[in-house]
Image: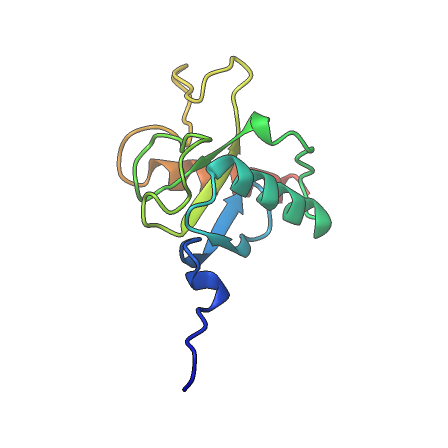
Length: 136
C-alpha cells in the first residue's frame, strides 16, 4: 500500500505564479515566481533586489518603501503594501517611485502614469522612454 505524500506547494501555502514587473526607464521587465499569498511590500523588495543584482539602470536604491506597485489593467490605484500579490488575479505590474510630496498621485496638470483614461499611462511611458533615448 502506497502512502500519499503531498507536494511542497500543496501544503496550504497557495499557488506560485510568474509575475512580470516593469520598472520605468529600464530595458525590460523583471520576471520571477512568487506565492499568490505574498505581500506586495515583499514583492517590491524582491523586485528591487533582482533589479540591483542584474545591474540594471537607472539605479533605484534599496529602500522599497519609496516605491509603489501598480497594475495597469486593474485601475489607477496603487496596490497597498499589505495586500496579497494574487488578490487582483493579474500578473503584470509596473513599479514607480513615490512622489516627493508623499502622495501617490500627481495632480499638477502634467501628464502622469496615474491619469484616468484609456492608455494614458502608455502615452506617458512612451514619452519618457523617447526622452531618454533622444538624450544619449
